[in-house]
Length: 281
Length: 171
Image: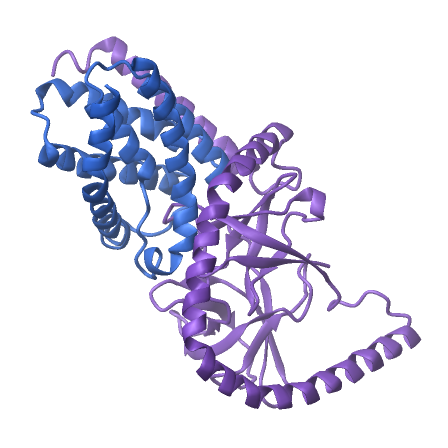
């Protein structure tokens, strides 16, 4: 073992550790800036993304095929269920259309052109997921050329799943809402109870054991019940208002007993994502 | 004959690298079932196979693994210097212990378990220092390391004989 820890090797090992640590600190430090990633990094990501498509598309295709088969097996029962819903939906749709038209007209009269609820959507395929337990990240197939910008919210078909953290030309990275790292940006959300009263707050964490979103430090006296709907509030930043987040699962006192903490069941399944939508305000 | 392995190894390496991500996404429902997280390590497995099954040590495994680590950091995490160091470190350690080992399925399995632990622990400590991870050591061992080793061992058992046949054929 004497030879293993010879002076030269020790020095080399220390230098390598310092380089590694330096690289890591720099990338963590510049990660949250608006201008990042630098062009070189973008280029590398674009090249890797192009190669990744060759591997990812067949694998995703295979997933699509197996999903289709399992869908086919459930078709009959699903059809029965859906038939009942369709009638109600038609009515709801007409209602929504009238309301939207009326809303637009009223806004025009008030000269309110850009409301918080307006957004355009960019649809993207999910290329890959970071194989790591610490970073819940996806790489999606649209980037700056399609209009994706940093910090935009990302949704699946059923609800909010995360936000864009790194934009390259042809792909971008999405940090899932389940990421608990301290550097993760948190969403501004809003709970509306059955009486129409709202409570504002931000996502403060993610309860991994129960798969619930946490909204801490709530001091409002508005009564919140299980099942109340949670949407993004559109306050502070790029997130439009009205993106569906989930429903309230539980309200409890926080660790200090001063404020309450609301636990929210996310509407989207964060582990089954093939197509996502980036919302652009 | 040696040129064939020199082509097959990098292609397999990058196939493994991108399959890690794709399969993680496709099977996310079972691999990342909260609170458990099992991380696929096909790259590590491919590298260890290369170190131990290539009898003549003619592959530049350290350089290739450093490159694969760089691409991993670049494309998957955006945080440099973690896998970039972890993978070559493992290759170096494997090269050091290789002369002392009587190579067979079981010893390679043990080596693979140890290396999985080293890589996962290295990544955990590094992310812990840079405050990307907030979970504690017990959670790491139970919820990440355990499932990770279980899943990767299963893959190892399935792939050991095919890959060995490949190396025997090519060598």
